Every structure is written in C-alpha cells, then in structure tokens.
Image 1: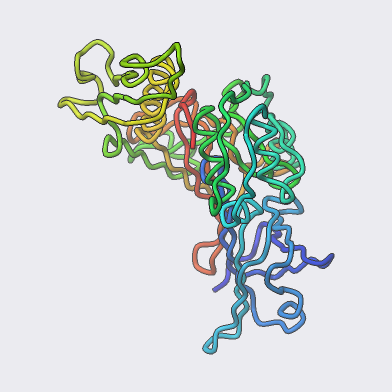
Image 2: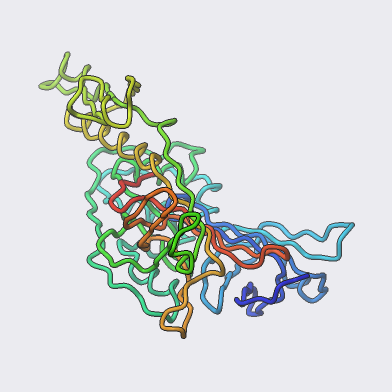
Length: 377
C-alpha cells in the first residue's frame, strides 16, 4: 500500500512542472562536490516527451529548489510501466569537462575558480547565508553570524595542463586553501568557503535509550560511528621547492613539517591511538612553514572522519510553531542527543539525502560532524 505524500516533489523542465513521483532519492552535500537525484513515476507519455536528456532541470521540494542541474538519463524498462530519470547538479559538468590551459599567475582564488567554473557558474560567492535561507523555506530560521571565509591570492604561476578536468584543478586549489566549494541549491552560485559554526542550532534531534522515561521525546533514529581507519597518529610532510640563486641547497631540498593527534608524545599516541600509525607525504612546498601547514591540514582533514553521526528523520523537515515545515539542509547546526550512546552536543549537518519509497514513506538521512570540525576537500 502506498503511503500518502506529505511533501510535493517535482521537476521543472522547459517551463513545465512534472509531479507524481512515487519514489525518489535526492542528495545534497557540502563535502561531496556533486548533488544527485533519481526519481520514478508511473508511465506518462506527456512526461516522457518532456523529460529529455541533457535538459536543464530544477528539482523542488515543497516549491523550494534543492538542486539545479541537468538530466543525465531517462529509462522506461520493458517489465514495468514507469519512467525513471536521474541527473546531477551543474558541478557534474565541472567534474567531467576538461579545463582550458591558462596561466594562474596573479589571480586570486575566487578569480581562478570563476575562470574554471564558467559558464556553468557565473557567480562565485564567499557566503552561504543566502543559500541557507532559501533552502530552509518559510519556517523560523536560526541566526547565523559572519561567514567564516578568508581568501588569499595564490602567488605561484601554475598552469592547467591539457586534459585536466575543471573540478580536479578547483579541488587542488581548495585543498591548498583549506576550503570547500558546493553549489547553491538553486544553482545560481558556486559557494567557496568553510562551514559556518557561528550560528544557532536549527534542529533538535533526540534518540531515547531503550526503556527511557523520555521515550515520548524521541523524534529521530541516530547512529554513531567512530573511526581511526583512515587516520594517523603522526603525519610528516617532506618536500622541496624551487630554488633561486640566493636560496638553494639543503634548505630547499629538505623542507619538513609534522602534526600529531596527541602533541604531547613522540608518535602522537595517547589520545585516539594506542599504537603509532605514521604517514609520510612528499609534496612540493615553498617553505618549512608550508610543510607544517600541510601536515596540520591533512591531520585535521582525516580527523573529520573520526566521528560521524547519522540521523534518520521522518519527512524532509521539522515543524516550527506548528505551522510551516522548515526543510533540512546542509551547513546548518543541530542539537543532538543520543541517550543510547551518551553522545550529546552541537553538530553540523554536512549531507542530506531526501528519499521516498512505497514501503518506507518519506524520510531524510543526514550525516553530521561535531561543531568545529575542520572540513576540506
């Protein structure tokens, strides 16, 4: 038996809005570059004629555009009278298209990314404030402080090599700057920056323990994953840079930096690691300070995988004041309490997966990391 829908999910294509989707999966994230969608509806010839490949689309939930991109595939299988379509946001083109070769010299990070992202994105913005406000819809919105972005121009004159994909170069630049980039839900901007931890929690997620006196307060299921699989107790960066007539020899050939999970021990053990686990990276660096910064950035990037909270919530948002439903979205904070595991605190939503099926109804699966976690590509 198909459950009645609480949300209106649609695709707008060539000025027409296609509704009636019985199953869908829509993913939006600030850490995965490409947002995706896959949707299924009963066979409809008019819809089939509209849903042509490589056409611009807006994917909407309750009238809010959560993804703007292109339709990649449409399928009408032989054994079922349905239409299934799938596609990606416009970052998908940056991932698959080769970049033109041009000099990087003298351009800022935003100027470089603007050249690589055109024509798919004409605006590069350093704030996610507008996007966050649009995605959350009409409900009460938590107050956010200043967007935590600082962009420095690059000084070296690298060149985009023939055959390199646009996003490959953008990702390398972002990694050096310790930043992320993601598409605004409505596709009008490519946002460059970091998560905004200077905001009030927008959501409250609570999972009671078995037999808890607070069972009635439970509103989601919560999973907790701790991992050291891809982390290291000690990361060492060694490398060399381009010498000059006044700066050459051993100082250029052996630049060194290191970072430890526990700075108080020789191998970084005593915190999350009981035994040493080392990673040595060889990178082209211009100074020992750059080597040190790279080691610390790599340690923080991997540490972001150390604690991940997963939340499964009914529907695609929470009621605020009993009136409007505010849509879940990434780059928002949540107050999380898992009575079962004892985890409690403020967490950042990094990924939302909106889905609906005939059996399970509508739900949103979210990935969250502790507030303050250093995220980068």
